[in-house]
Length: 291
Image 1: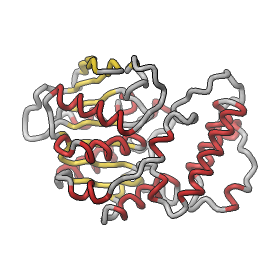
Image 2 (image 1 turned 90 degrees about the vertical axis):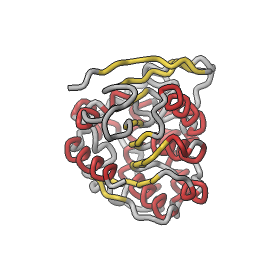
Image 3 (image 1 turned 90 degrees about the horizontal axis):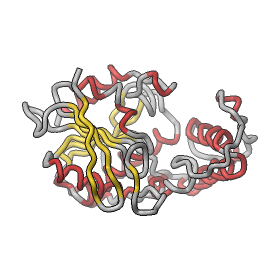
Image 4 (image 1 turned 120 degrees about the horizontal axis):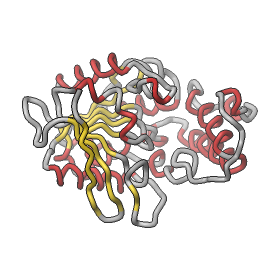
């Protein structure tokens, strides 16, 4: 097992905490592998990272999440700011270009990084990025997003998360049938309806709306030297993030590459959302090696 070394990069507005598995600078035939998510922090990659013991693996907590304490007085999470943070990290460690696996909102950050600093990334595997603009029913997706936000504002995290799960597990476009559903009960998903009064959850508040509102520039992305691979989980078929992955792939003139499991397919059992991390790692290695 690789030792994990934790460091802090002091940049304007945040003390950015990151973890390093393996030597710096990297040795051997492989580039450094950067694993990112959003709003997930570095701990989400504890099951995936050990499968790449032959590489230097980097993980981090995005600005304002987990251990990365903000000093800028803001609470919003934007792809532009997070991409700037990643560029600062790659530059400070002098490891570019890296191979980058990015999931969910982290994949949106990664697209912005490629658009603004294409020399930082050799291969990007963008796993199920939640981008409304690439959907044919983008307006309805925004309405569905507003629905779980309103549930959160009205009744707290349990209600908000129940509505979020209902949205992200819905099959196909957000039709009248979706909006005609009754408000889901948190107990259906094993959650409490108790309200602790907080309204700053990065997933359920409006703090991360800039991520799902992101508009990728196909011309800029396809012109970049970065090899971009859009990934979709085999068990995600028909759901919101599967559709956004396929929509992004179509925008970039490619087809999404199928990965094992679901949206959290690289997770172990520690989050109660276990995927198939060993199979997922094997597929990721295959895709990276093909580059």
